Length: 464
Image 1: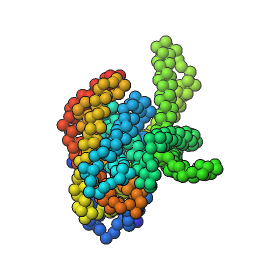
Image 2: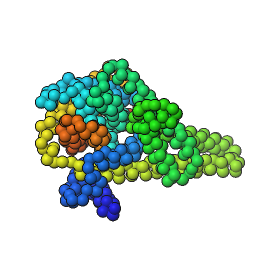
Image 3: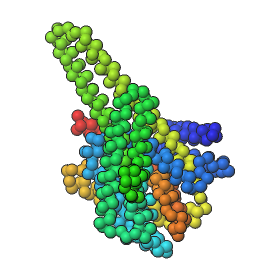
Image 4: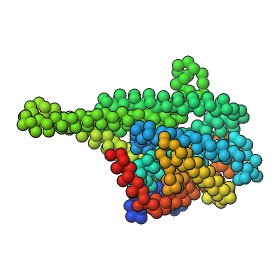
């Protein structure tokens, strides 16, 4: 156990040093150092004796990553960019899978993959990693709307990819027939059901939050809210059976966790903003009294000071809670990268190198086309944020893959004949996207750094 702690702390320390000194995004540093560490101490895997252990580990750590990322979003931004985010995280993913069905034979013609197998494979490599995107963006000044589009797409994209993977891909792989009616019904049920469950869990969490002023207790409640929503959604059939239903239905844990966290964050932010507005009104009243040479009563001054102290304390507690959860997310991400290094089979990756490179190029082209289509649409309507060529490049290469792809990989039946090839392709694409996409993304942002700063300033001016 001490070795595990030292390994996590040491790898994270050096990754952060690389980030601060050489501007290398922490995900790149973490995954590189994790591989170096693993191959220096190959005989002692820390987290995974086999790939199945990694899937369990990811499912355990995934909610805290989602909670940390969801706390960076607010409902106002989601409303303003709702149509754009819906296209990026739902329509674009669905269109990408549809495109893959008609083009997969050019890549995997020798394997004679069924439509179900193609859906399963492409759903896995379309799921993105919001942690890497947020980490890279945090080092640069970017327009707020661009960050919302990229980070929001990375977050909600995972939910869509998982829904397609489980309820369409695996469903068909099991021999069931896919119809338009089935796809429409299951999508509506899962999305709406997950949203309602997430909102309900969020309000319950908010009620519990009102019972404490302790920062550590607040963080525990936030974690329980996100994890609770995730668990209830993934095991929704258990809840149905308790109330007499007989179903194997489960919802999207990712979507429920995201919505539950956003709900709590939104309500807390609203409460703080209302208190801030009240303080502004109190300040204005005091200034008017001072100008009129009217001496405010002691009770009024004491009341205002009490409200100021309570508001500042609550705001500080909320900020520190977010920072604590972000720290947990960084540690969780470090553990995931160490575990990923342990399950990678280099010999297997080399065996399927052609398939890996082909899939990487294919998904890159498909994503570039989807983002290009999005840019064309946004420039033809006033209801969506216009996307220029610079933004198109950022959105295209913000599609870095992550641990969720491996979780889905572990859900494929062991009897599936192409499982070994799928394992190599998915892990290979994750590694390539982590290094290549990150490098290109940094290069694009660095090259256009001055322009992005001007866009940010113009955006702030328009907002004011």
